[in-house]
Each structure stands twice: as structure tokens, then as C-alpha cells.
Length: 297
Length: 139
Image (cartoon, rainbow over all chains, first blue to last red; front, top):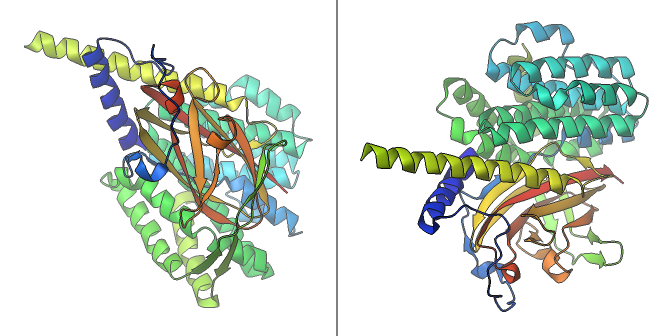
């Protein structure tokens, strides 16, 4: 993403000089172009540099876990006492993501005191990373007032993390933004794997397999920073994990979607299936455990 | 020569800073369309020039409903977004829905999707920061 921005903004600069004007996001030309049907297959793609990779919010998997009736287990989360040992920005970024995922997990189970503790841990790491404004006193007050309301708490916390992500991107610190996302992904996967092994629930097995593409996206997101020593080992571990995921089989059948124009909603009807074996689950469990131990330890 | 380079550098720096701040304000405007959905905590942005297309790769979990909010510039409808499945079947484009700035998507099964965004050609936009925000709720 950093690479994307660097490239695109360089284009902006050069364009600006040539036109002796400033770039406008709403630059209306004097002459109206005739409306034409856009065929994306004919568009000018910038496939590599303009590709953006998304990792699902850890809150979504936490919601699934709660929905399945799995009992709350705080021991699965990172301990607050570990906070003091995160001294590098690399560790702080990753563990901000970890605590963020844990915050979502405990919030969904409406564990107010635990949520407050993870909130404080997140606030401390965010402040150390220079994104304390995402967790400013106003936001903290709002979160504290929302402690009794699961939905409000999740919503405000998610907005705080989005604000942090926005700040990091605006200030060209996409590497740190990537670490926060990575920490959240691994913690979410750790929670899912641990509970799947304990409760043997098909929905959780599926959710693990469904992370295959997200893991690939995460690796692509972090790859621009591969040369930085701390990233090298971490990304290598993710790639090693991705090799196991590669063997997880997915099937997909296209079914046309249905759109409700009035309510502005489209139902995506396509069917998908994940086939994950016992052996794959064992390997994923071990590798996730190793990666997470290095992050939180 | 050094003076020219300095001026060039200063201008480039200003343009870059200006573009970043534009992305920032666009993201904040785009955010207003997200509630009551919960943000996924990320901002997806790319600067587009002419007919460039930005691709967004993501996983959408079955049993969830998502809201995609897409913005560029100061007005709604400046950004066209189209969603494709993993086989590149078109699932939705806001172009067919009055360039709607946001839309909801209910996924019955988990899907890998690609969202493509480009500037709305009918508005003659030459360049702009495109911002995509995603919110979700459990069904």
C-alpha cells in the first residue's frame, strides 16, 4: 500500500507541475464528456501497484464465536502484564493489533472490566506509536460510557482503530499500520484455532479455512517491508503458514445475486465450501501458536 | 540547477502533502455513510488518475451483511465501484444504481471478492483520491 501511495502521489506531483496547478479531487472539466458504458475489462488496470488488500476485522470472528455459544475464556487472550515488555515499534504495532482483537473478544462477551483493561493497553501502545489521538480522552470517555453496551463498545473501538489506521496511512507509516492489522489477524486466528480444537465445531473449522485468502492478502500487505530485519523473519513465518493453507480446498459455485433497489441491498447468493483436514488443522494450530508466542512473548 | 531541484522538490512535497490531507478529509466524509455498521478498522485508499482502476481484494464472511462506502472528491457519486466474485462474475456495480455512494451486501456464504474502483467518467474527473470503507454486522 505504501508503494501504491508513493507511486500514485509521485504521479500527482508530476501532473501538478505539468499543469502548473494543484491536484483537485473534484476537478470538474468545463466540457461534459458524453456518458459511456464502462467495461472494466477494457479499463486501464494498474493491477500490482493499485491493488489493495483487506483483512477482515477480528471482531467478526469474535461475533461468530459468541454466536456459537462457546464459553468465554479470558486465558486465551494476551495478558496485560506483557505490555511492559514491548519495547520496539515492531512489537508495539503487532501487539496493538493483538490487544485490539482481544478487546473485541471480551467486549462481545460483555466483560466490562476486561474490556477496560485491554482498552488501556491499546491506548498505551497507540500513544507510544504516536497515534494516541485515535484513543484521545474523548474517545476513552465514550468507550467507558459504552461499557454496558456491547454494540456501542464495538462500534466506538472499531472507529478508534480506524482513526489510528487513517493517521498512520496519512503520515506514510503504512508499515506500522500493516503490523497492527497483522497482530489482529494472528490473534483472531489463535482464538479460532484454540476454540476449534477444544469444541470441534464445524463452523470454526470452516472459519479457519476461510482465512486462507486473508493470509495471502496479509503477506502481500507486508511484503514491501520484507527487507527490514524484523519483518523478514515474521513474513517468512507467515509464508510458511500459508503453505499449509494452500492445501486447504475451497469450492465455489456462482449463483446470480439478487438486489433490492429500494433498500439498497444486494444478496450475494454464490455458494462456497471449505474442506480442511485434521492433519491441516494440527499443522495450522502449531504454526499459529509459534507465531503468536513470538509476537506476545 | 540546485535551485530548480529545490523548487521541484518543494512543489512535489506540497502536492504530496496536499493529496494526503485530501485523502484524509475524504475518508472522514466517507465515514458518515457507514453507521450503523461497525467499521472493519481499516481505510482503503488509492490515488487515481484518469481511467486508472484500483483493485481491492477481500474476504466477506457468510452470515454477515456489509456496507461498502465509496468516496472521491467532495460529492457523492464521484467513485464507481464494482464487485466481482473470484471467477470475475460481476455481482454489483453502483453505476447501475445512480452511482450510489454506499450499498449493503448480504453474504450467505463466505466469498473472496474483488472490488474495482475508478473515477466516474461522466463527471470528467481527471484525478482524485479514492477511499473505500467497509462496515459489517452479524446477521
